[in-house]
Every structure is written in structure tokens, then in C-alpha cells.
Image (cartoon, rainbow, N blue to C red; front, side, top):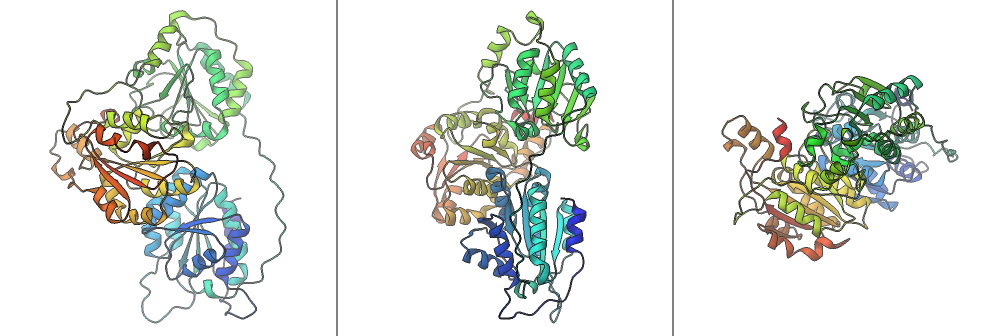
Length: 568
């Protein structure tokens, strides 16, 4: 549904209808509409404006997950939407409640997640004195990239909400604001509307025939091609077709970080491409003479800040033409669905002739791909662990069906490189807005959506410090969540960046916080971990599919720079 249609529904406003005994309140009508739309779980941090809506939802047996900060509340709904492949709903308050959650809202917009934010706005009848929470929510929404809808009268409340839900479900996050006094005003009787007919599955956009021919020509002329899959390839289910195309053309397959482990187990899988590539496989990427990128944004992480694929033919396939060449220069832009394009190529690309050593599909390449990731050598230390060894040990201890959430920051390079997952649907890197501190809320949302399997959060000591108050949320909700604090007593990325510039890094250092003690004070099990032996003591809990939350404050070498930082 187009934003213009939504604006037509919400334009204008009428005086608030007073409460009557025979008319439901707007807060109740909105709660009923949310339940009718299939919403059974909401997240948020209510204010005096939205408290009645939250109470009405709880009275209808909707599960309410309350956070201590709005940024965490929105990331909880965002993580829930990602893990549950469903609409995430977050209820906050107006003014400072909305501004507190701005970073998380922008992150959800950048990720393209189905998210509905509900907040109040200034009442229609101003009270005495200044309104300290006055804010132009429409301007805020526009700055964040949110679609904005307003409810200014009770008689159109449910129709506006219904339209807002429809837009949000199309992966365009919506901020729905309701004038504070309207919540308690009378709503028009709910219209009896039949359930919408099931939508016909939309056929994904197929590439133009001339574009398929251009891609086929690239593959025909290439000797060592790479087929690169991103989030768009995951969403379209393109992996089988891309793998068959690799078999036919002698290509390697690889992924962006968002599509991590999509081809896990495939014989010609090079893994994550770019700054997080297994070091023993990186030389193979430097031999690539053609790239076809399916549904990948081609960020600087994927191209190693331009160090990879410079000067080679580079095709980018995406359903949105605005993304083609937007970040990385390309030679062949193609508008089309990733799966539809790969299948179209299979129809026209013949089997590759044997190429001997000139092609990737050789016994030598297979042996190189089978090598274990290479560690940077470090000396043993009594007070901290090598983060590479820590993550590899966790791989052996954690339940194989884990969902891994990685907060932004330097530390994320270690699980990205050394911790495999079952597929990209089990890997969430919260860096869509390059913001640190998004991981805790996202992990809580993931755990709420997947209560039967373990969630593991990797977060730096800086990122956890930013969201420390919501350890109380962890204590209250008791999710099956393991929090691995990669504690290097610093803002890691900034410290290493200063080192690369040859500048002192004292200002990037952080005090040593005992996060296990903080967790224990809130009733959460925790331990300080300075050696792999101390980690092994928690093997039973780490291997469990479900269990009480656990905080592991893991002291890691502060001076070991993750390989992706070297791309700077």
C-alpha cells in the first residue's frame, strides 16, 4: 500500500468525542483491532499517554514485554519481527519517549523490517502551562524514514490503525501517533469487516531477457567467477539455484555477512566475503575475475573497503533499482529477483567445460576451502583470553540450534569469522545503522520469538554499558539467553583505530566493570571468565536448548585487532 493512500486516511482531524457509557474507549478499540490483526505479543515502555492502551492489551491476554529504555523496547520488537518473520509492535510514549527510541527506529527502517510503533502526541485540548513533551512527531518520523500516521478522532481510529498495520507489514516501519486525550475518548462502533481474502502470491520480478544474456556473457567469458549471495537471496530462496549455477559454471559461492552460512557444507563455499573472510580462503577471492551479486547491498565490509574485486566485471542483481551501484561501483546492473534471475541463468548457461587449473573447481581448491580458519598468534596471559580461541571453544560448547545475535563493535569480528551457525536465519548482526548497543534488545526480542531454542548474544563491554539498565528486563523476563560479554575494557573499534593512526588510545579505555556481579545483583546467574577452563565449567548450561539467562563476563586480549579492522 502506498504512503499517499495512508495519508489520505489520516489527513485532518475532528474534535474528540467525550466518553459515553455505550461507546468503547479508543484505547479498547485499538486493542481489539490489534488482536483481530493477529497481534499476541507487544513490546514497549508506556507513558501516561499510552498506559491505557498497554493495560487494554494485557486485559486481552496479549503478552506485554516491558523494557527500561525505549531504544531497547524498539530493538526488542525489531528482533522479534526478524526472528518470528512477523509484525513487531512497540508502544512507547510521546516526546522524549519517541526521541529515546530514534536510533532503534532508524535501524529498523534501514533493515526493512515489519514494525509498528505506537506513541502519543500532544492532546487536542492544551492544558495549563507549557507542554514539556511537545514535539513535531511528523518531522521526527520523516527524519528517521518512518511512515507517519495520526489518529485525531475516535471515529476513524480503527481504520487508521488497520491501514498502518498493512503498511508496516510491507516492511515499511510506521510511527502511529494518537493525540493523548483521544486514547480515552469514545470510539465509533467497530465496523464489521470480513476477513480479507488470501492475497495471491506475487510473482517475483523476473530480469529482462537482455539482462540475462548480459549475465550469461559474463559467466561465459570468466574463468574464475564468484556468485555472491546477500540478504535478498536469502529472502527469495535463491540458494539452491545459485548453488546449481556454481556447479554448472565452475564458480565459487560466497555470502555477505547478513547471509552468513547460507551455503554451509557446499563444496565450493568460500564463506563470508570481505573483511570477515577466513584468512586461508582470502587468496581465492583475490583470484576472482567476475562477480555476480544476488540481492546484496555490497557494503564496504563485503568488498573489504574496495580492496577486493577492483577492475573485474561486477554484476549486481536486486529488486530495487535504487540499490544498484549505490555503494560499490558495478559494471552490470540488473533489476530482478535473486531466485528468478538465477533460475533464468540456469535456462541459458551451458555446463562449463573442464578447465583444469584455470578454473576454481579443482582438488586443490577443495583442499584450500577445507582448511580451518587461521588464528593470529598470541601469547598466553593469566588475566585474559584470546578472543579467537574463546569463540572457537564456544562453538564446541553451545547448542547447535543456537541463534546468534552480535552487537555492533570491534568484538563482532570474532564470532562473524569463527562461529558457524545453521544458516542466516540463525545470525543477526545489529549494525544496520552502525550503532553500538542494539544487541541486548534485539536478543530479547529473538528469545521471545523463539522460546524453544537458545539465543546467544555477543556484546562488548561498551555496548552492554549503554544498555545496562535493561539487564533488569532480562531478570524480569527470564529468557533462554546466554550473554557473552567480550570485555576488552575499551571502546574496541576506537582504540584500534587510534592505534592504526599511531595516536594514543587512553581516551578509548573503559574501567573494568564486573558485569557478572551486576547480573548477580539483579538475580541473573553470571561468572567472570578469564580462561577457557573457567568457561568449560558452564558447559552444561551452554549446551542446553533452554534455561535461565546467563551472563559470562569474558575478559579478552585488549590489543588483538580483529582482521576486519585492517581494511581501514
